[in-house]
Length: 294
Image (tube, rainbow, N blue to C red; front, top):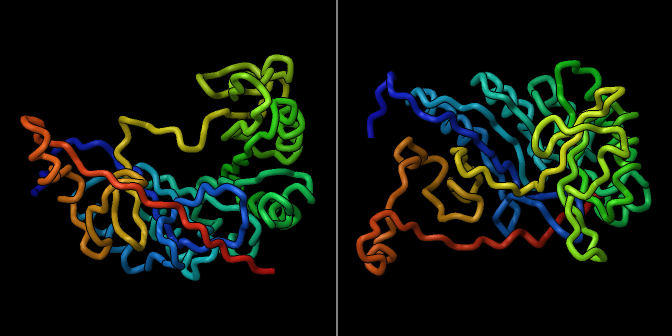
């Protein structure tokens, strides 16, 4: 498939799933890496994808470095540098407990997204098996990069917890994003039930709030919120996908722009009658093995 340089195409969002390994031991997992065993996306494969998109004049608006725990990738800094060279906004999803490893990539990042279950040391240790002190060190090191936006992704155990988390993130000078409400004691618990006005916040857009006095910004959006109009590629060691749990479009080292054109699945098409573009979907279980190190 040839792409004319004058053709207007929607910008892409890329998620590079750098590794399936992680040093947290969460009771639940937002791990985007799909392989059960430890796998790692190579720098060569990432460069191949970026070069193929550039050669096809396909604009990339955002690149997210994720995993697993992406700071465990030994070439993280070079990966971040090459991603930044595309002109895209570059962010990383991390638990932040390896400040020394994370620091290598900070000069090339636009957004640092930290997943924290609790700012209370023992609760954080019990929930994720990680030291909150190490995460706070990551936040402190991020301050050395004034253009870097830092966001704490935090699930809530209850609505009552929101006030304390907002106060803590305000004091740290970082944004707050509530990604889930785990409270099952209410009839219909929802993030929208947070008493924003009473806490000093006013809505600026659906799902976004700002403190009336200090300007602190907060969000309440589930972390897996789907954007149906966004063109997004999930790229891991086990292949390229248009959806996280979708059918693999092929190996990363074989990536071409043709992968961006949906292909009909022959077997499903035979059962679909006159519907020519039905695609096969299969579920990839999240990795259950999480490495734990001191």
